[in-house]
Image (cartoon, rainbow, N blue to C red; front, side):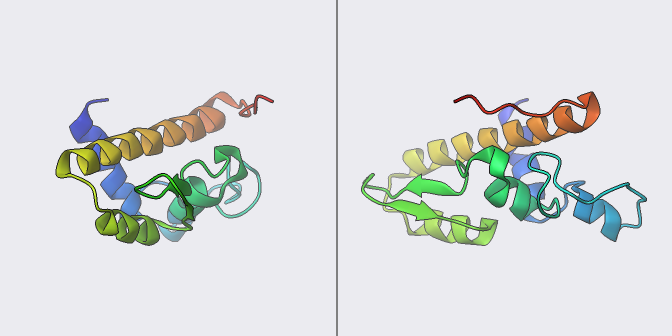
Length: 126
């Protein structure tokens, strides 16, 4: 996936326009369950998938602050975006940070899709 597509995908996630189970139900699509495909706990929405689902191990929801001193916990995109705007980093560093975040969001969505369409459960390594 090229950087433009990854950025476009992340913006769709931010605006809650991905075909998550909660969005499909809201649009009138008949699905068997709205339960999260990754953790089987909670309704599958953008905030749940990217910030709360157990299988993502809170990687997306926790970042070190700009100095690497303190862990910051997020529960939704709005909190993450507000934090990013407050970072005192050079422009190129912020751009790199966004690129890593976009790639992470895409990777997690790909894992979700392979779980649904391959009927395979993600396995956490110990």
